[in-house]
Image 1: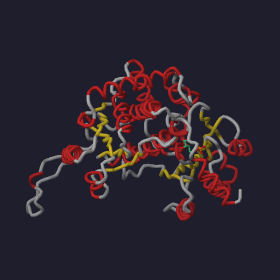
Image 2: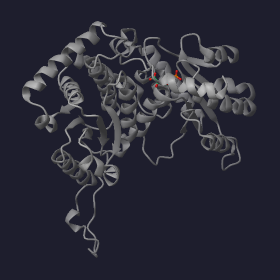
Image 3: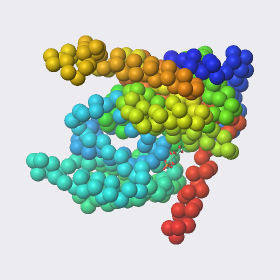
Image 4: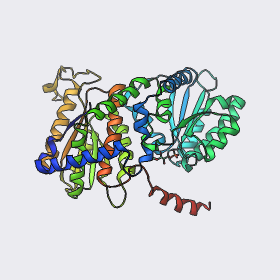
Length: 428
Ligand code: PA5
């Protein structure tokens, strides 16, 4: 199970307050299990782990391997829950400087003109040997009508049809809802291959469906281990919810005590995008009816040299969640230096992981002393299995804690407001 350490919150709540809040968390979990809370038609993220669809996993794995073999470039076109999960997993687990094929790029996650123009320019340029790049495109949109995604999709698919002719049809893969929506009409017209996002799985909870799994399979990571990591976390939490209730309880108690922000941080730079994924998951789920902890993100130790100051000594309305990793992926050590002039010899022979962990422990201590309650969420190692566990852990945490706020975690009515105003300005 994912580890939860709430020692860093003890001085901010009494044992009785914790006990009471854990009881409320238990009730919220029960509500979720029974499908008795608001938005219960959106609990498919639990259903798909209860009864895994191995045939679909096989299909995605094979399709991913085939694209991987044939593609120089794989573009994932989607926004919000339709791209953040895949990006988080790939960033966390793929080697940062590997030259492995295919290169993976994201599109349609904003309306930046330069980015999209240069992306098309880049894929248009021939390879060093003069041959044409082999590009595949996965458009992902549950509604099939999100503007950012639709615009990028229109531009990239036009390019693909011009360059590849009829072959473009086998290079474009669409992931969308079972029926309805403009994207489904396009799929029918063009006969693109299609993956279905189940009706009962909302965008930000869809990472364990083809939405997240196909791009991850294309990156060469092991989607079955990832998926079954999530299944393992699901099964153990069904038997015994355990410490996830403490985390939900602490978050809720601090929310009621007027804490306004949860800074979700990690000393593993590989987890920066994962923190962004939790930000989206929590933010769109809990920020309603004037409630919620604003989920901020910090990547340490980089951000200790920027918002670290704010966390340490700014307004005292912050809590922090630190995601930690026990075992290092790399054993890189600092070697002794002959000249000794850089003054670092007291660290000679020490691993970077040890130094990073000391920075983490020191920050934990300093933030506590600065009046910031800190929860630690611990992973054994950064790999597919553990990340799968962590993904389900955060989905479940979101469900339980947001039910404690008496809010529907699974809708996002406020997002419509910017769309309405934007469409009006655009004359739609
Ligand atoms: O969590 C959500 O539902 C949202 O973040 C959506 O994923 C996002 O708005 C994209 O929507 P769609 O997949 O319909 O294009």
